[in-house]
Image 1: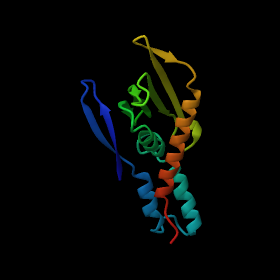
Image 2 (image 1 turned 90 degrees about the horizontal axis):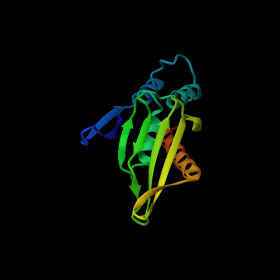
Image 3 (image 1 turned 45 degrees about the vertical axis):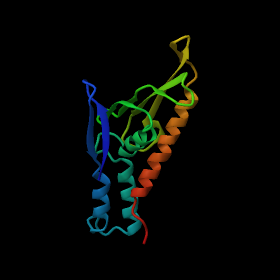
Length: 165
């Protein structure tokens, strides 16, 4: 299981990298093998959940990483570094509002799936007299993007948990 990360290198060429997410697969596989000793099914599920929340095959929380990329996939990517947990988009101009543009930077700060492990910065500009001018007041946009990433990360995590049969 893996996810693709698309980056532009220094010469402007796009590079695709596949990042493996093995922690959950290993934990899910071990749960049915009796390796956890004589633990009952609920204890095994609890341990799997805790392991999935701290998944760190790429040095940061893989759910937040994947959710960030999926949430911002409509924007052109300038940099996506899974080692440092930084995603930087290029300027995006909404076709419905060609006089405004936005750029987003996402910082994944921790291995845990928690809201304080995520920091989003949004930069907005408006076109005035042929020049792009910075717009203040991006706090609401930052909060909305953070919330969208957290919701998506939780969906991804829940989709990978074992189901009761």
